[in-house]
Amino acid sequence: MMKSGKYVLWVLLLTALASCTGCQMFIAKRLLQEVRGGQSQLTIIKNASPSALIDYKRIKMGDFRNEMGRQFPSYAATEVRQAFIDQIVKNPRIYDLASENSNARSMLIMRGSIIHYQPTSAISGVMGGFSQLICRVELIDAATGKIIGVANCCGFSKAIARSGVKELAAGAAKAMRKWLTKQSAEGQ
Image (cartoon, rainbow, N blue to C red; front, top):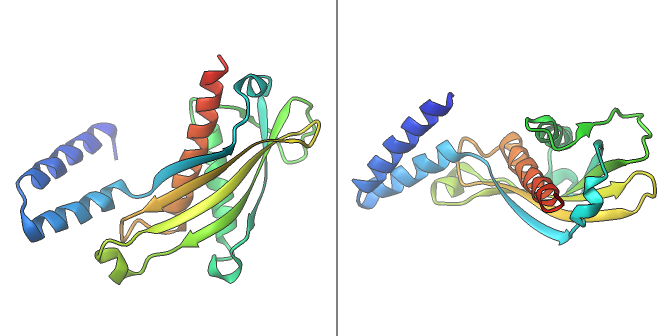
């Protein structure tokens, strides 16, 4: 959807919310959650110093491990990793993406673990439940192997239709982008 289309949709939804009462208000809120889709939340555990991050020009994506076992779909760790790659290469770029076999000195390695996954059922979704995916992300100095930053990147959705792994992974990746862009801005 084009940006102007999104603005028109938001205006229509806000107008509908303003004129609703009771059951109509509930339906309008649920519709708003469907439009929103996946959202993000960031919790920094170990903050990488902004001055240290300025020296890095490239980032290499490591593995994203599934710590949830059978509770998390086996194909989904690949989707989560891809969502993080998509955010790294999104304009404006934070870092250049290094190839899998790159061994550059001033490079970050990003790896992650899927530490929590909570899907929502249609019934709980209608009643206000939500789905959630939390990835613990580590930034590692490629030259020393030292972990320089750790954060929990959470993707969540209160939507019913737009609450799958792909939406949640996109939300978690947006949280990672917030973390890296905040760190980059502080170092300048």
